[in-house]
Length: 150
Image 1: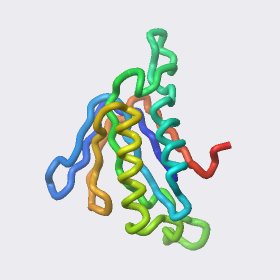
Image 2 (image 1 turned 60 degrees about the vertical axis):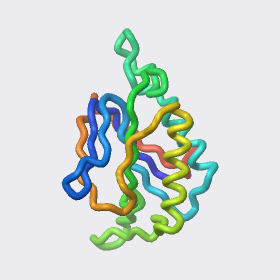
Image 3 (image 1 turned 90 degrees about the horizontal axis):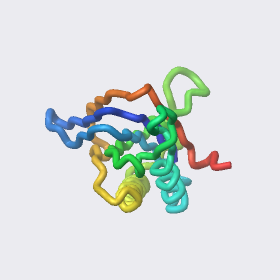
Image 4 (image 1 turned 90 degrees about the vertical axis):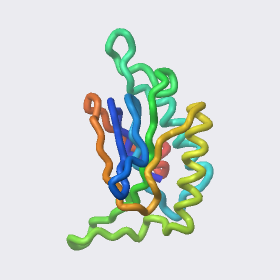
C-alpha cells in the first residue's frame, strides 16, 4: 500500500461536475493498493498517518499530528501509484490490485482511518474519473509504502 500524504489548507474532489468531497485544513491522502496488501498494512498505515507530526506547533516546528490539530482528511484511490516505469514509456500497472481486491481494502482503510480520527473523512469514488484540487500547505508531501516499514 502506498500513500502520498499532502498537508493542505483545502482540498476538493469533483465527479461529473458535482463536488463529491471537500475539506479545509488537514490532509489529502492519495492511496494505491496492491494485491499483497492486507489488514495489517491498513492498521499500520492508519496509525502512521494520524500520528505523523507534520503540523506546526506554537514555535513553528512540525511537531503536531492531524489527530492533535483536529484537521480534516480526504482519501482518494489512485492505482497509478503502483506504476512501473522500468521498461519502455508506457507505465505498467500490474502491481495495482484489481477492483475486486482493492475496493474492500479501500473501504476498510477509510473505516479504520475514521475510527482513528474519531470523525468522518471525505472521499472520492473508487474507479471514477475524478478532478482533485488542493492547496498544498508548506508544501509538505510525504510518501509512505507499507512494504518499507523497517
